[in-house]
Length: 160
Image 1 (tube, rainbow, N blue to C red):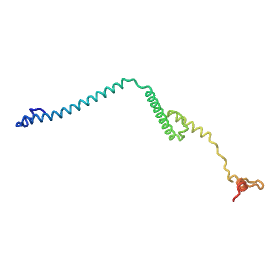
Image 2 (cartoon, one colour; image 1 turned 90 degrees about the vertical axis):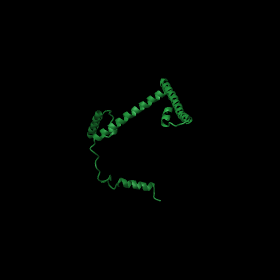
Image 3 (tube, rainbow, N blue to C red; image 1 turned 135 degrees about the vertical axis):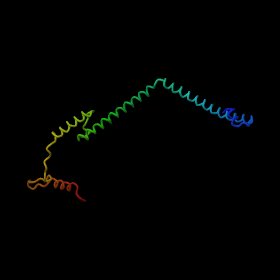
Image 4 (tube, one colour; image 1 turned 135 degrees about the horizontal axis):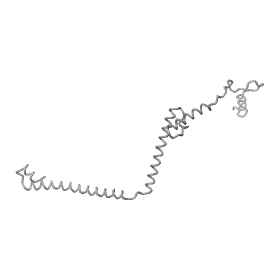
């Protein structure tokens, strides 16, 4: 604020009061300027430090670790996308995803069709059904296997 602005607003103001107002106003402005100068110095120091870090050659150990982490992340992303692809083809074809090893959708579908064809051709006719439960019939006086086992248990582990 200028002296002329104050005298225009308050024409009857005394010179001592005007000087005091200007002094207080100047103190606020000077404090703000000092704070601004301090912030400028901090900014300059931070910019110099950043420039020094950019100019400094990278630490090879950190670069190697960064490359290792990047490679691991890439491998995990690839493994995840392959798993999702195989699960999708598994749902479409009915072949378990654990049997699929191809790395493209077309190859997975072809592999699934091959597995389905093999499973259809290799499926055994089945085991014969034994209606009697495995008991021996037609032997002169021989008892069933389960009776023989029960007798053996009684001989070797008698009830107390």
